[in-house]
Image (cartoon, rainbow, N blue to C red; front, side):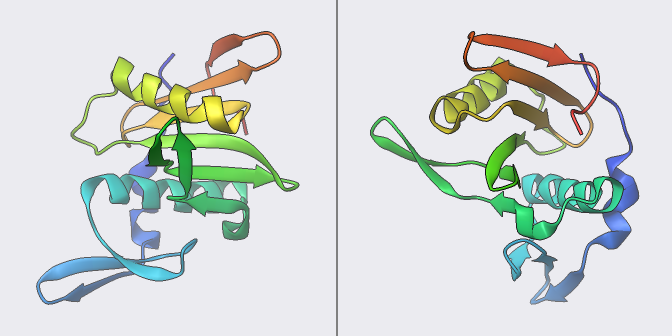
Length: 147
């Protein structure tokens, strides 16, 4: 079930600068300037939303970390930890990219390695959340965000 909320309300919280005709922002998790790209904008708005609306500390978040799936190295978009355990796994797409079965398969593939109980997929306009019971092999779509 699609979950709706106004992610754009957090756009004014982004720390943007212009340099050489390009826009950069300060990523509060990685603590470095990153070139503003469409998918990255979605991630940054989510970081602000999670921090401001749900009081998640930036220190509890991990962004663009590597994981190995089979013979390939991949990078997940965002994981939020609760008491040192990964609790939420996010997959972001650009505002212009529709959320398809491929996005669901991508996050599911990452979660085979990570075993995280909550998955959130978003393109900044459409958002879907799932709860994963790894013990029983059950995935349930959620009507609201799990935090």
